[in-house]
Length: 98
Image (cartoon, rainbow, N blue to C red):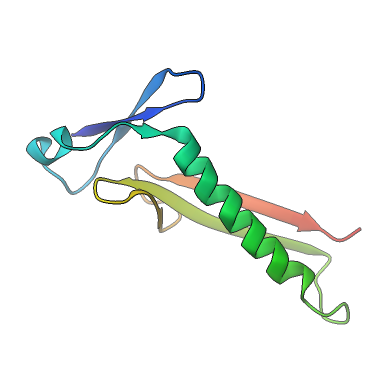
């Protein structure tokens, strides 16, 4: 199965399996910095939190949780994917009113 390199903050590479592409296509995939994945997670957390705090107190749940998947794409880098898809990160964020 083809792989891409995800470069961690300490500079060490981690191999990520890529689905639905050939080995030939995988050769053209650049190394992807892990901070690209973290930027997507941070932007998502910020937007979800803004939505959560905007919920009127009368209907705001005490606990709020969001899960989403992130995959590595040859064309786009870090992208959203279905939760639980093979080769993806599953991110779960929780907020508790208090």
